[in-house]
Amino acid sequence: MAENLVTAIFSMDIKDQIHTNLLPKHLAIIMDGNGRWAKQKGKLRVFGHQKGSEAVKQVVEGCAELGVKNLTLYAFSTENWNRPKLEVQMLMRLLISSLKKEIKTLLDNNIKLNAIGNLKDLPVKVYKELMDVIEITKSNTNLTLTLALSYGSRDELINAIKQISIKVKNNIISPEKIDESVINEHLYTQNLPDVDLLIRTSGEQRISNFLLWQIAYAELYFTNVFWPDFTKQHLYEAIVNYQKRERRFGKTSEQLS
Ligand code: FPP
Image: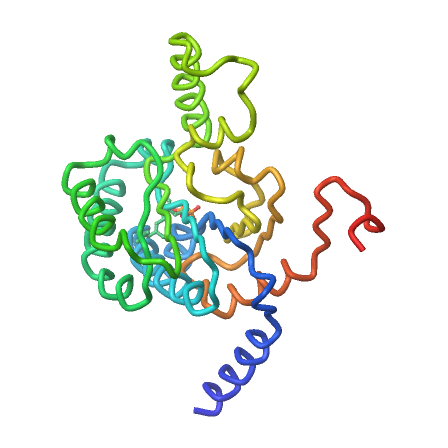
C-alpha cells in the first residue's frame, strides 16, 4: 500500500516534468530484451514476448494520454523470420490475439492503427486481422500507432528506389526532381513525420535496420530496462530526457536562441 503510494507520487512527479508543447511528434521504439527477461526468470522466450505485449499496451496508452501523435513500434523485423520456427509461430499468434484483445483500447483512446513492412509476407490470418483493425480504426485521430512488421529499413529503401526508378523510366519523374520529399513519398512511412525520439530498451545500443532514413535527426535514448519491464514511468523518463536536449539540426546554439 505504502509502496504503491510512493510509486504514485514519484510517477506524478516525473509526468509533471513533461512539457506537453514539446512532445516528440514521432516516437519510435525498438522493443528489445524479451528473451533475456524470460531467461532471467528461468522461463521460455515466448513468456517474455507475452509480458512484452502488456508493456506495449502501457506505452500505447501512455502516449495517447500525453498527446504524442505518432508512435512506431519495431514488432518484427525482416531478420526475425530467421528465428526458430516455433518462436516465429508464437509471435504471430500473439500478434493476432493482441490485435483482437486491444481493439477496445484503440477505440477508447481514439487510436488509428497503421502497419509498415513487407506485410504480404505475414501469415494470412495475421494479415487479415491487421487489415481489419486498420479499417476499424482508420478514422481515429488522437494517435497513429504504427507496427513495423516484417520490416527492414534497407528493404524499405530498396523498394522506394525501385518505385522511383520505374517512374523515371516511364517519364513520370525527372531525375532532377528527386529530392527528400520524393523519397519520403515512396517509403512505407510516407504519411509520418521524421522520428524525433528513438528509444531502445535492454542495454543494446544499435539501430538494427530500423527507420534509417527517418531517424536522420532523431534523439537516441538507450535504457538498460528489458522491454517487458518498461512502464509508463520509463516512457515519461525518456521524454523528460529528450526535452532537456538541444536539437540543433546542424545550426549553432547561438543561432537557435
Ligand atoms: C525483441 O526481444 C522483441 C521482439 C523481436 C518482438 C517484439 C514483440 C513484442 C513486444 C510482443 C508483441 C507485440 C505487439 C505489437 C503486440 P528479443 O526476443 O530479441 O529479446 P532478446 O534480445 O533478449 O533475445
